[in-house]
Image 1 (cartoon, rainbow, N blue to C red):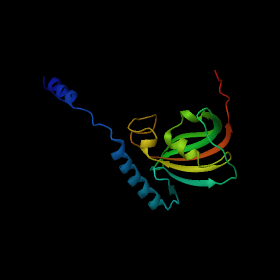
Image 2: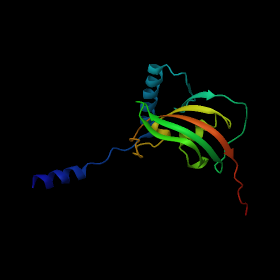
Image 3: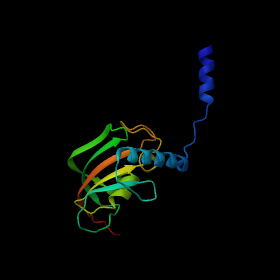
Image 4: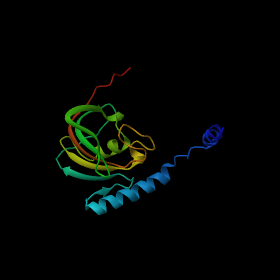
Length: 155
């Protein structure tokens, strides 16, 4: 009987609403402490995305939603745990990557390498994805090997 009553009480609790503005403030504070503690020279673009260009190459160009990106990358939690790794180049559709990647990859041309420290609000938000816990800030090193412009069909 006690167990049934306890389950009824727990099921009546409302989940905490996700507030992107509040979470972004928490994320930025956490990232700023992380970069300071580790002596990482990054740029904050004002959106909460922190970046460090690791391999600078000459080039220009714009990324579009239909572009295919050939990349390698390593993604870590801020505690250093590797949660994603792609060591062999593979292609990803630009429009399918997270907001943090989309904004960060615009900062380098093809052939560049960048470190992105991405707030959870620009990554997987309050969702657990694979080894990535909800509300996790992520530290990615990405090599942008190739950009393939896909032709769109006009009606």
